[in-house]
Image 1 (cartoon, rainbow, N blue to C red):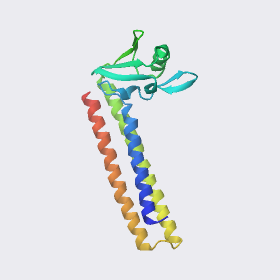
Image 2 (spheres, helix red, strand yellow; image 1 turned 90 degrees about the vertical axis):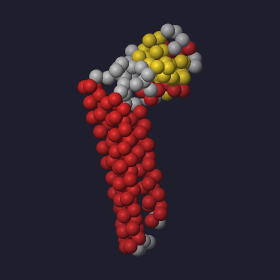
Image 3 (tube, rainbow, N blue to C red; image 1 turned 180 degrees about the horizontal axis):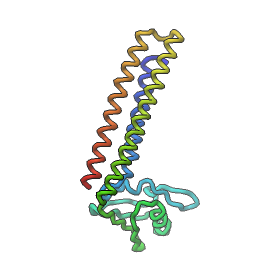
Length: 186
């Protein structure tokens, strides 16, 4: 691999690590209702596990309420079961046409647990980024040993990879901090 390929590969993988963190954080509750709270729910319909967002429109008409309108009314009971089984701590209210989920305000204790979970997820993302750095550095060392890259190029690649690592670790910190603030304000 050339120096550019090593760097591009590392940067692409680091971007994916940050994107994965952002996706993971959408499932963490704040005091506000968001469609992201039910994104991970899969419903057993038509003989397979189907993501909820493919079966219904999901909206938040009020800050404390999520409304789920199934495209096919016959799936409403299965959707309700999946929400209860999803262990979100939300009780679905089914009126036969739609499901309402009232999102209660979070207690201080629950908020602190959520912040701890955010910290865990951000640390996992940082570890992932560091592993990508290690892999890229190993690839640069291998190329130098095989004489397809000079020592100077290898050192430059390692320096650039370190800069990328700092950049993406900073992004992870900013994303996590923003989410922590949302959870604590609620």
